[in-house]
Length: 290
Image (cartoon, rainbow, N blue to C red; front, side, top):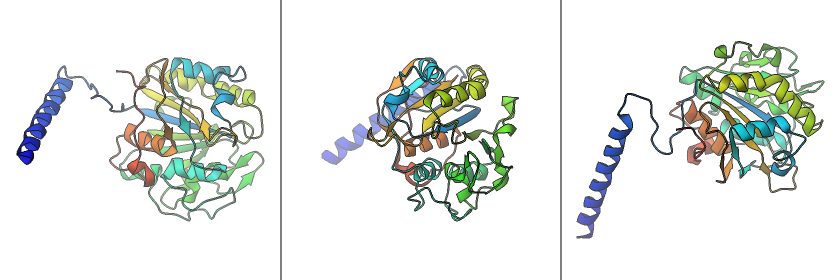
């Protein structure tokens, strides 16, 4: 009896899901089922440095980032994975810290583990990074002035072409030519590591506000997050999403971390794979425009 009852319930559930799927498809539009992520044409991810949620969100020192929050989506319970900086970048990019525990200069191309870039490339989709103060495209130098490779995990992977790492001067003015997914890495001053919150906020406004405005009307997305907090707030960090796929003024109090963000980036790009711990992570939901 119990087995039969379960079968009946399961059949009814399947019919209900089928009916919902049919309803979603009516009208010929790319409507989304509940909980699904959108499919933006371009996603740009910017990672800032070493500040807790309360140091940035609501701060008068960060008017531009707070304007993105107000016009986009705020994740109020977003967390880094660990300390210090470098393992968090590897976690966000590959779903694993890859054994990195410090900010030391690793051997370039030491890993062939799956990562966001390798997944995009394997799926025939475009990837790139734009790195402020990188001496030249593809340079694997550990540091140069305000440039630090510890914030650029893609250099750790043999399955990511070094040529896909460009200088920030190569960030296109025609945003339609951007890769499907790209990361922007400000240098040690612009990312708030060595300089103030206000300095980093001004850098974001001066360098990415044009893309953010364009994204609002061109099915594209800007994600601004932080690697870790200041070690005083349980690793709670700011994460803000902005662009046409986002419900303006939305927020989520769900707990997310770098693995959840990675999984979301993979699904936003329509990938069928998930690297490392992203495989058991969850998508960011509740902030997307219907």
